[in-house]
Image: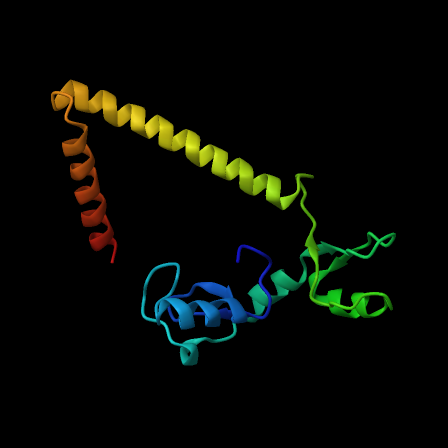
Length: 156
């Protein structure tokens, strides 16, 4: 979900996910790790090492309640939120972003950067095709695709 891990669990391939997120994913996508496609079953999920949980619980989050705006450690967040009577949903939190930009803005910057990189890649493929393959872009793309598939199989 790309948010702070809520009730984190670790797969047999050592990837970390929120418990509810990975269970939903396994149910919909099948019994494979979403990160590396290694076989993964709900019964294989374990709690991560305590040192990781300590680091996670020491992350600072900002209280979303109006006029509070206090920074609290994630491990003490639920206790802090229970002190506010007007809050109904206790699982809401906002990660303190040291860069000062909202998360959605960072995601859109990433998308923009991805589009820019794809545009650059397209221009490079076109230039290579004109120089080496007599302008046959399709042949270059098929070769790149086959190389990517081969590299993925070697990684496995």
